[in-house]
Image 1: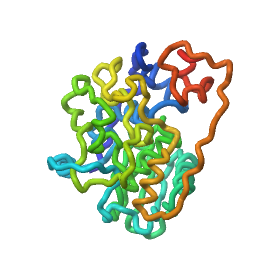
Image 2: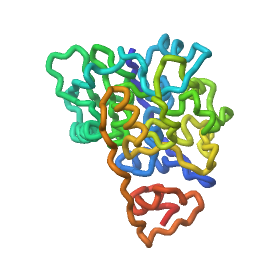
Image 3: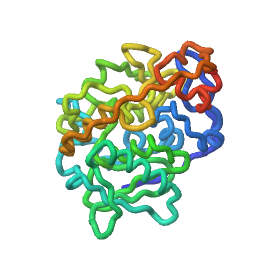
Image 4: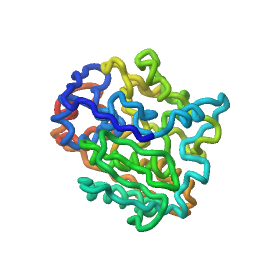
Length: 314
């Protein structure tokens, strides 16, 4: 049921020029040790997961369940799992770490972030039947929602960053990916011609009754949103383009967006848990953008930290 896959860690990605710089540059070996804060979560996940058979790139799901998920024609906008059977009782998630798991500190930091912003609580597992076990597998993946048994979250080498771990934790507490909402096509254009046939299922919208967005507008900045180049055949061409701004970079990997937080709190009945206010940062005057695609809201914050930004945005 839970398949593991191993791919080469030496295959380089080609440098990109054009509207956007592809966030994954250089050899995988050289870049995995870095923390590219401006990179989309899913770009990092797909970097190692590659062409494995996980649904939507990082969701562990049986073939039968995938077919059920995509079978019905009637669909409704939704994102968080709607069935209460998939919610963790009282919002409490027991967990443990597999023997030798090297990223306990990073996972606990991600857990504290979720706990700070929601009423979800993580407790070390004692005798609970249903629990999450964090493992260091080949790649990064999770199941969706509560399973009443052991379920694994894999944090592979190169994934030990807070935003990536939070992405997988959100799958485990009931989140699917943002771009599979029914209203996606109002905001995004999918370049189907640049997606291999076997991967097109990863861009389908969900069936009625799968998940609920609680009235939240589509969030292109969700930590659950695919990046612009997800599953691209030609990595010089985007597979997902914002309809409001073709140069807009989708998703992020710093952590939950305000919409992510509100949806999780509403689903678990968290009550009044107020997201922290958005902070502002003074832009370093020495940061000068050399390319037009550098002009976006968050890039200057990381002018001297990101390997992508260093190359084109000085």
